[in-house]
Image 1 (spheres, rainbow, N blue to C red):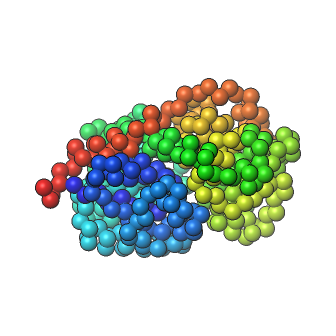
Image 2: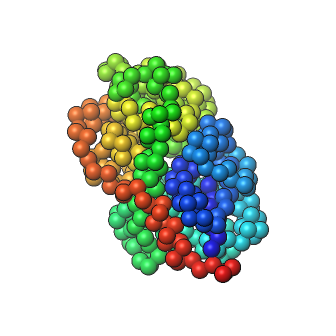
Image 3: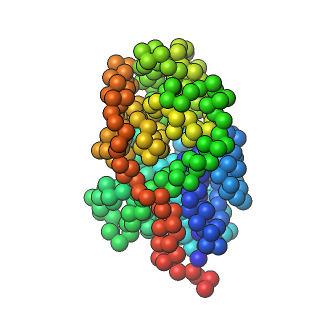
Length: 363
């Protein structure tokens, strides 16, 4: 059996890393197609280097662009590579334009498709990510749901139960495998002159936040207020697109310490040592939950309701006063929640299922 892994963003590299490592361990035939959706060194190549993963042999170098332009270019490039490689199964992960393009290409070519992290739902169709994850799920032959909640979402949409496998989330594998490495190798605290538990960490990059001047301004005002109240630095490794929008909107935040995007191990170290994390990222909601670091989500909804259920996370939206109140709430919560995303063996389970479900045409 041959597997084609399609990736293109930082979260996909991280969440695919346990699956790639398991394929290598088992001498499983696989290849990687990199779309180039993330293409700067700190957002892409350094992740392969730090995680000690082989570089993708095929890089489409798509880069940025509108959703239609980016998805169209990816679809053309992925189809060409799949026709050349003829894999038995294609794997996509999550809710990116890369995942959508890989799903459509596989479906059109009638190649078996597996979707890692299937079944997540925010039920907000204004989010491009929601459209992507729904379409990927309904293209897929094998749906690897991280939790029972995710499986229930898929069943309610009419997807046959025999296609769905609750595996846990590979983000747990990645955190368990890499947090010790981050402690040894990442010098982010020293380089940024930070002390453990004496700073807040923030990530804001989602389209619905950074493209909307009033929402972005509300978030920045809330961050400033929190930093001033607690007299702690607010560290914001800013995504290139968010930085561009900041300038376009004419926003000039105060009391926020902005840095360039960080490599994976440095960011993981900063998360693990932060007093609290404020984010609009789905993956960061998961990682903070696993690391037992309080999280405040700067959105009105989440496709990770498990974090709300175990009380590692709270939804704050973008109102400055609400953000400040949610920070107070989370700082007063005990960090005793149970990680709901699995035992760190999701990658092993996924590869085992693939090897059992997909017969090789070459055998």
